Image 1 (cartoon, rainbow, N blue to C red):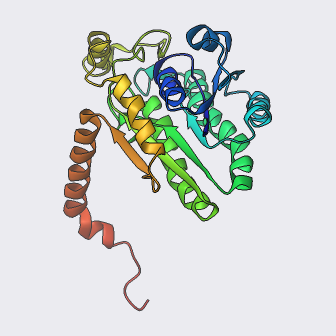
Image 2: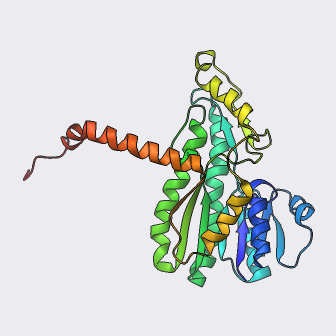
Image 3: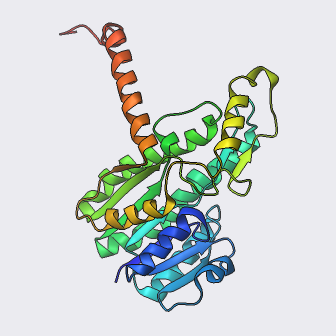
Length: 278
């Protein structure tokens, strides 16, 4: 029986992954700011621990991890799922809005990871799975600050995977595309208070798109949760796992664009080294 530690487990991807892990016979530490929301959804089960956790509170993160280890003896899989979106232009996003976004999506992820890693190092085993996004590989109009948090998660995970590999620990960043969850609902998506008229055609268009796309996204959340089970069952998991045809298409499109731009500017790029033998 493996032990999962899942943040933001009361709804969305977190709840569905919790459900699949329990169905697989594993134990789950399902965390939420209000743990009663976890119990209300799943009931009281011997293999389920509903733990209080606001990921922006490092003391709470340490306490939740200690409670998990005390209850189940170990943590095998950490899923850093907690996070939210911010829709608005780069100029429209206030300093306070961006700081709050990074506090949850990046610094909260780091706080939980720091709390879990000493136990995984002691075990010489474990798998850390960080939720990124299609926007963690390619940025989009209206999502600059949000994508910046997910770009950060990508960079952190790539470095972490290299650092923990000699210790028997894996790290994977998962990049979901648009899935039919409540991500575009007000409870998961914030919007910048400021809206600048000059960005009406660009960011404004994205606001309209987001409103129309809500609950009409192409991805099936239940199948995403099943993919997590396949991921943790793999002896050698990937460092990066895109999920959804839209993410795959975005990655292929960006890779082609970067390759083309590099070819166009290759001479200038290489011109900045010292001359050979200098």
